[in-house]
Image (cartoon, rainbow, N blue to C red; front, side, top):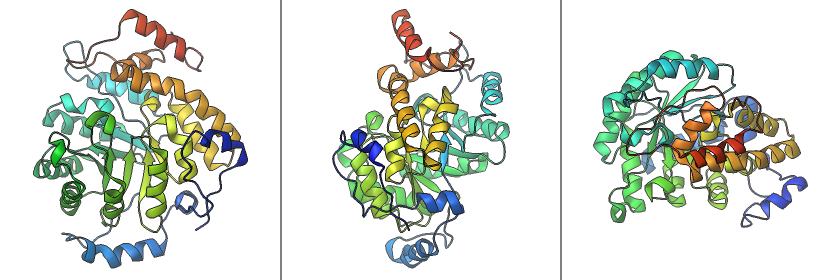
Length: 360
């Protein structure tokens, strides 16, 4: 595999991060994008390590090409907080012209923590119905208990999901050791009929999935990737470096660090901002693929402020409100989340009014 070289024009941006990048850092991004396949060496490695490293219930090795952008779609609620499938359909009619790789259903931005199990499954079924067949559906199936996660993952597969996005259990934080998390994800992957993607979102869970745990789990034949929303660019680079010989892909969990993640070898992103500025986030992906590093860097700079607004600053209520600026349906959040105040909406409007498609 070819080494990933960071252009000089990007050096200033990377001075803000601890120095991890070296000329010896390797990744499989180019191979994945250009050949739409994985190296035979990686496949051989996984087959040779499958039974020695894990007690798997299946002989098959799973893989999907995750390269591209996935919006973690919001759940559109009516005023009474019931799901509005009509509004979901309207949003998909607008998203269909955006070159997404697929969609994440039941991610953090979908308010999955506030939804019943039957609602989660029904929503995945509806998204599978609405999305073009060539778009991947990644469904959040993480529960606190391992047995419940296995059951939910199976139901998500039956509902039409192509892969399961499994968040770290987090209620008993003292018990969530690296060993406990490794055993949890191994059991889920052993019993999942679809590939599993690890999901680390410490801002919401308080659990930062350890790098060494991720690296061990990457050898499992049914664990194909990681969505990292922590934003520690050195950790992302280290994981990509240590898993480069395996059929394992990393997705940036935010548009704020999408470009630096690409430069380290990530293959795509699950970005809340893509609900609103899907074309711009996909454009950054394409600019990187085309080697237009300076243009990609400048676009990355432009996307940081609006992304911060719909994540750290205003969260899901801000994301839903910003969608309405561009003709999408955001709608209310489910209680106990509160709507934005007028002053917050005005601040959000000032941030987004500079982008194409803004309708006020």
